[in-house]
Amino acid sequence: MNAYGAPAPVTASGVLFGAAVQVRFTALSWRWDFGDGVVLDTVTAGGSWHTLGQDEFTTTDSSHVYAGRGTVQVVADVIYRAEYRFAGVQEWTPVEGTLTVRSGEWDVLVGTASTVLVNGSCTQNPAGPGC
Image (cartoon, rainbow, N blue to C red; front, side, top):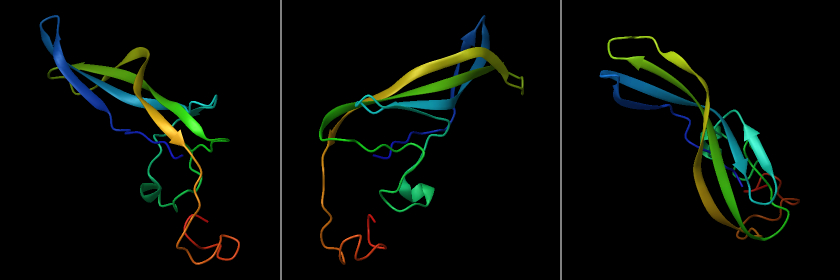
């Protein structure tokens, strides 16, 4: 499984003490709970194999291989830092501490598959899809 998230900062606007303010949340790290007892902490959001310039099914910084079949619940927590600025101020001021946000929970069916319609097995054709 190749897990990945969206790393773009999120900015929210509001009013604090009668003044317009913006708060920017920037992801610092991700915690992937793969639902089988394995938890992985990463400092990057990961990406699709295409975005990473990798062949499908290759190992990534945020990938995981399940030992058996079944249904698992995958959970992603994102750890953010926050900064704020009042209207008319260019610089952002950091807020002490971090904020952990549960970004999603997904039921994942883990199974096995065999490749078909390829030019031989990976032993016969190591450059084939998924090899």
